[in-house]
Image 1 (cartoon, rainbow, N blue to C red):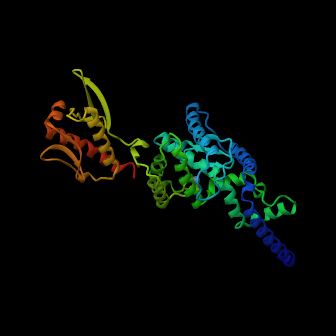
Image 2: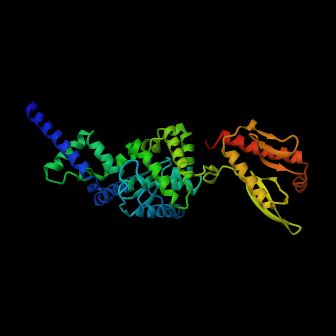
Image 3: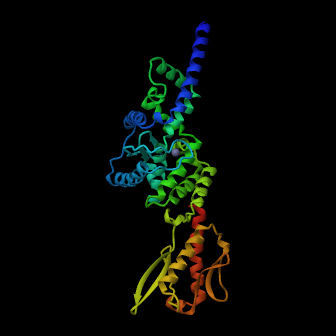
Length: 386
Ligand SMILES: [Zn+2]
């Protein structure tokens, strides 16, 4: 009925859109900063209307302290971007906890970050929580929403019409964000996510950002590894807003390796680990290695090493072995000299002097130690990491 008119309108629309995208592409940085803060404020107001925020003082303190440390770095330092823009734009970051059992987190532009109760329950350390918060900070710090809107503008007719209306009314064409309501923006952030490339960048940037903090970037990896083992959560929030697949986990691991960071999962999870404690017996300091609540090794001092040195070395080797995905059958007891062997490497050697301190024979002490390590390996296999 209106074919001539609407045909003309569409031509104009497409032309205008093409111009706007070309224009926007030339003014990438024009959308950053003030515009983001403005759209962020509107989105944050929508989020506050829709969700119940936590008023648990201890949890808020935890989230906000970690968040503030990471935000201070992002506000000062340029962090390499694989997607988006690394342009440093200081934001007044805010952190809220949403009372919802989903394992989720999201951000809206301008530094508004939301962590779900379910995610707080799921993380096993501050390092993991910091990994998630750093990831969300990078979405904002690298201006992902502005880049996403530009992409959406080229795909989404409704948005194109809104864009056209803005242009006709004489607004600056680069102000794409202004034609969207806060609600639309936050729905994009929450439901559609920022896209695969942006997720990779947020992971990579989070690792880089954490390097300058006192949090271990391995926390982001262990969080993702554990989540990736929970396919039943696939329809839940974080999978939708942050698509998580094996490739993304692999990419995060590769980034850590590229930075030569030791991947010690025991530092960022509550997986059982070998620990060293000291006690003074008859005026001499002796160290013991405990695993899973049991004393498995009391090394006597030797000519060149103290008891504490030997204990520390043994604990480090045990933890590395537990982390290296060794199988239970790869753990053996040395039949000649007392000791526990993993894949041909001695985790700890038990001399007569050591065994005496444990009131056992070297063979008994070795068997008991190996049993405890195997037990931990078994539980690891059934439930936790990797
Ligand atoms: Zn994300």
